[in-house]
Image (cartoon, rainbow, N blue to C red; front, side):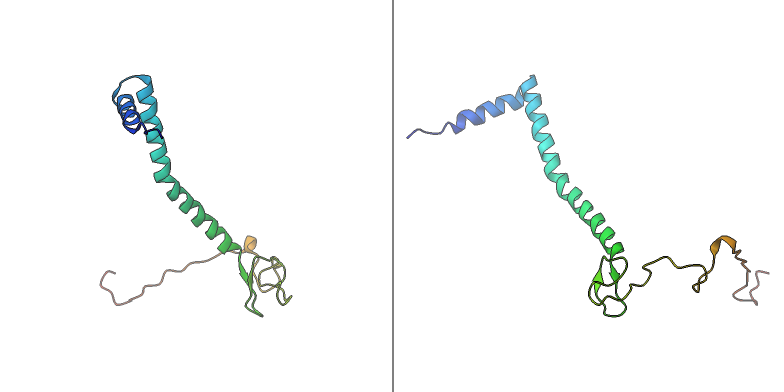
Length: 117
């Protein structure tokens, strides 16, 4: 059975790290890059998962009839009733045509007895 040459490998790695040559620089860059990836990868995966969860939550719809939550757009897959907001409403369906509407804003004092007048 052969003895492992652990000390030789450690000495070789120390010489490469301490040597100002291209092999030492390459090894330092490689170790630094791997460390950066290992530190930032969980953060990037967490951010991507959070964004994906927000996108999925926005697409989920709850059926008003049975309470089933799904990503269906037209009708509930559980009971078959139409989902609220499934199709865009026409302007005559209890909504205003916003292209022809003007909003007038009137300023009203909350406290008419204030001395700031």
